[in-house]
Length: 341
Image (tube, rainbow, N blue to C red; front, side):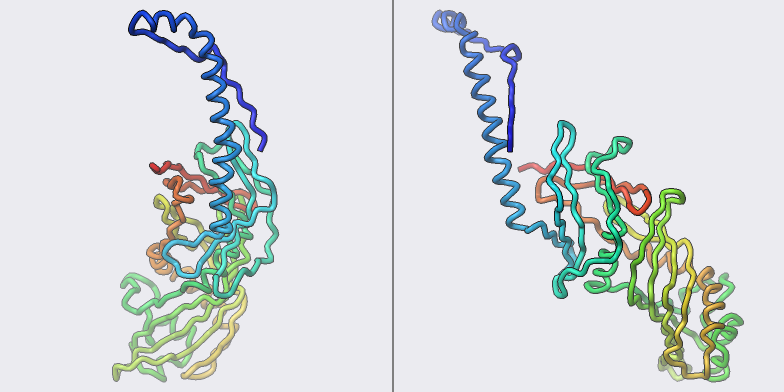
């Protein structure tokens, strides 16, 4: 590291007083100034050329730039840098791939291309700025499906009484989609829907509509709560290439998602206890049903908050996360608060 320092001698003011000898010494103040300035410059040089690289290299060697995501076992973030760190008079920045992965399976790179990203935006006031590409988002969601869970059950009693669709065998929409279910299980039998995501990615981000889109494949299982008290899987369906739009909700450093649109492309019927289901008919009716179910799904998603890592190497903490949308990447800014040593 090349370091150049200059301490203006006229900015140093030395005062000596107290007795006769101090008065004599004060006459030589001009000679002390140069020595003091030289000592200050030597200390700065030593700090930047020796102390700072030692601390930074120690952190890099210790972590290998692998950051463990808090509260999630085996979930890591690899900040592999492919260019030199950039240090100017106003900021410090670096490029990194930001690959999330499950430590048990190793690093798996997404197919998404990494766009050209800025290092700093002067029109955003946050002192800590990060730029997240669709590459990073794809690795984030695919690795989360490996280390965590994404899905849940929509129970019949979660549906508001005012909803035009009710989860039971006598509901008009349910009978239309799942023909023969009422005759097999009987009238007014409560139904539950379990969703499990199998893949999630293919993200697109556009600045024009401040929205994000993605593709997913998920299993949907329909359960009948039979009158004898038992519960049976009535049908199993796989929804493939399901396109969805979503936005992000932020509370300080907690992030959750909200669905804005859903459209399914392919439907595969895996099993059915009450007859033959038409995949084409299911596709049409399910696309209608998604619009009705969206508020219920969003209520479930609102409770699935993810905490963004905020402690950076024990040096400072981040607060008040802010997002902005650009083509193929997100801006994420936050306010750093330095921690006392």
